Length: 139
Length: 254
View 1 (cartoon, rainbow over the protein chains, first blue to last red):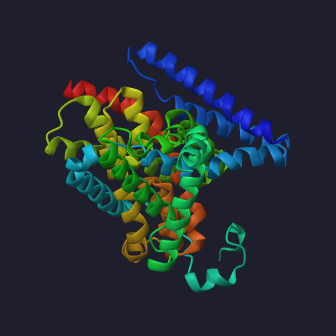
View 2 (view 1 turned 45 degrees about the vertical axis):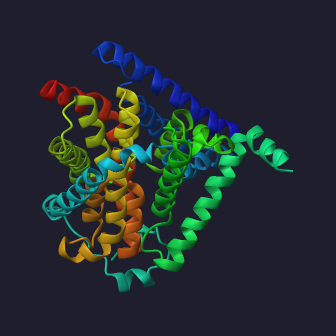
View 3 (view 1 turned 30 degrees about the vertical axis):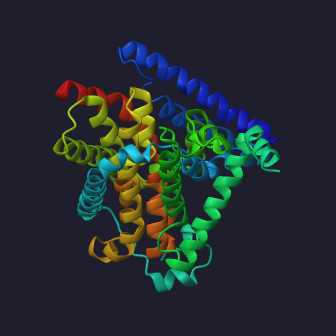
């Protein structure tokens, strides 16, 4: 049933947020410490466990997928909620931070990609290889 | 007639928000396809439209909650509020798999941590240069420079102001848009043509829509590799932002 997937998600969130609050108290921070992140790790592990044993039915997965795909619309709603007028003063700050972060990340890509065996995927060949996600077709 | 119209809208706030966001996204994807030929991802345009609507809401009402300050759009506040936002973010973890991240190996995991910390440090430095000195604002802007999800999650957790959270979202947005637009052009210069570098790329940049959009425009075959690490980035950022990174920032800047 679809609700099983949604309920699994909800239970992961409640447990994660609970641990986040507890961590906050333990660390002396008046905040939820990583509750969302803990819930995500929990969901990954539980879904992995259930999938490997075939215990996660398709409708239950659909329940999870629905909220997964609602993520961008909810982020859009969230952006429509923000105090944009007050933040326009921070325009150049946001622009500089975003641009420099991307350029710095670009510079690090070749450095961190060193080592190991590299399988170059040519775009022309990849078009002949069928399904988008078929990893085994890589030459 | 207008009273009935207004009553229907104010009585069904969440439903109005579904329709509003849906129409906004339709327009965004239409613009994405027609004006940019899909180069700028529809989701990025939709978020920019959302910020524009929030600006309009702020100017019209003089309030602090953007479009949701206009009574007929109050549901936007529920749909984009903390509860559903965190719920949807956690649901994105459904796209990730522990075995997949194992395939990424050491460089994939290293790039995740380096990527989060690198963007965070860049954001904190720029925020410092612009005169922010309190640990809460610095952490939130640094976290927002990681992704536009990590910023508000971190900011909400440590109690940042709405203005700072908005700046953090804007920084993440610029990162996301630049990643989408710039990836196809920069790809050949940084060796972005194999699974390993795609996983490193996803881990370093971390903005899921930016990486997925950028890699799709570069070579669709690379998308799953980049997305595998990128889907962990926001979770890692949400875990580290309000905890380790905040504590470190607070220790340095008081």
